[in-house]
Image (cartoon, rainbow, N blue to C red; front, side, top):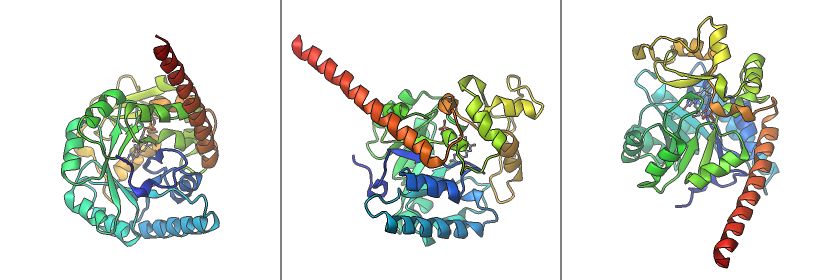
Length: 331
Ligand SMILES: Cc1cc2nc3c(=O)[nH]c(=O)nc-3n(C[C@H](O)[C@H](O)[C@H](O)COP(=O)(O)O)c2cc1C
């Protein structure tokens, strides 16, 4: 199945994924202008009244960009809604998405038919992120238009399944839009996501090390300096299993290799979600793919690097396929 028209104008098959605290209008606009889907969690706009301001700015600046670049307009943007019972802003933030006709809404931690219907009412589409096949079935039954498979090694809250297993089992029954996430930080990994059966790569941690991201210099440098072995998988900080930079856990006076079990009832994503905000400010979420991140760059340069690598990977893969085909033909 081909991707909906919302994904027209992509320079690369990539969604810049929503990042708590870190994604802001500067990052979203830079991602869309560079040709990949930009996104932000609605909860990043605080207080709640800021959501409308952010959406007004993003909509206006992207429209102006499109006017100035009619041959290469910006990619669409997305807003992430945390559909968790503790999110007391959900109705408000969904109303803002309807008002600004947000093209893509990404739902996490809960799938609700009424929210999906509300986004469909103006022609928007809903992608739901999942870490299991059970949740993938539920999301589609409840009306999501597409899925985001969050595999092992993804930054922030992450699953434990291999990307190959997750995509293979979803593709056995779902031929609609599918993005894959987890440690994707190079052009060849974007192509690998497509080869495995996904339509799009969903990339988070690599965008933290950009000029536009709302992260401290220490956090950005830590991403540049770290590699897969520096990532801890734990539910200690939010009650949900996720990946974090070990140096930030040590900075907080804890041993990342000996954390006690968590209390899931402490999870709070509401407007008073200060616990979550405090945890994510000092304990730095990060996926395993950041060994490929060597500099803090402007977002457009990061996307240009990914695009150049993607082209090289496509050419190399085609050469191998042709060489394989000619060997088979010669038999
Ligand atoms: C610091 C951080 C914050 C995140 N915040 C959110 C969030 O608010 N909502 C969400 O749906 N996903 C969130 N994620 C998950 C990402 O959207 C995405 O699944 C993940 O970054 C992809 O894996 P990668 O980081 O290895 O590229 C977060 C990830 C990180 C690293």
